[in-house]
Length: 246
Image 1 (cartoon, one colour):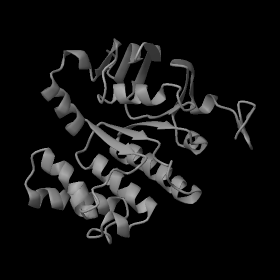
Image 2 (cartoon, helix red, strand yellow):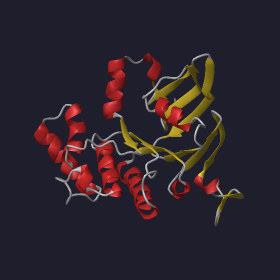
Image 3 (cartoon, one colour):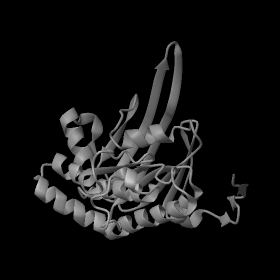
Image 4 (cartoon, helix red, strand yellow):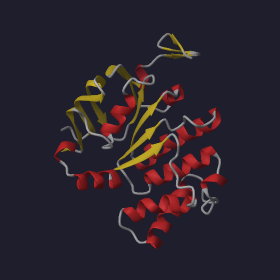
C-alpha cells in the first residue's frame, strides 16, 4: 500500500435484512484516503455515508469488501485488536457530543486516557493540556449542562485528540450548532489537522465544510457519485457546481 494512504476501502458492500426486505446501504465503494488530509463525505440522509463512515472507523463490518489502515486489514484483526485501534489510532466526534452528564469537561476527556492505560493523575494532566489547546482551559471543572453547544463540541474534540490518534472521524460535527459556532468548529478541526498532522474524515450535510476540505466525496444510493479536490470544486454564491443550495 502507498505509505501516503492511511485508509483504503475496497469494494465495500453493506446489506441489512429487515424481515424479508433486503436493504443495500453500500454497493461496492472503493476509496483511498491520504494521510494528513481533510475529507468530507457528503450526501443526503439514507445515502450510505454514515454506514461508510462507521465501517472505515472500525465501528461496523462490511458484508463484503475490506478496509485497511496503515496497511493492516481490519478483517484480519481480533475484537481486542480492533478495540486497540479504536482507542489509540482513531478519535471519534459525534453530532450529539456523547459527553457523560455527571462528569466535568476534564473528566470527560481524561477518561479516554485512562482507558488507554494511564494513571488518573497523568490522564488529568493530559486532559487539561488538550482542553487548553481547544480554548477551554477556563472550563475544566464545568459539567456539560453548564457549557454551550459549541463548548461541548470542543470538549468532544479534546476527547477525540487526547490519545494522539492518526485519524479523527467526525459525524455531523456541526449538526447541532448555530452558524457561527459551526464555523468555529470547522476552523478548529482544520487547525487540528494542520498542527497535529491528523487525518480528518467528516460525514456531513454542511456545505461550509467545503472551505476546510482537501477532498470532498459525494455518496448517493450507496455509491460514490464523485470525488474531487477542493481546488476542483467551483463554488459560486448560493450554488455548488451550478446547483442551487437548499
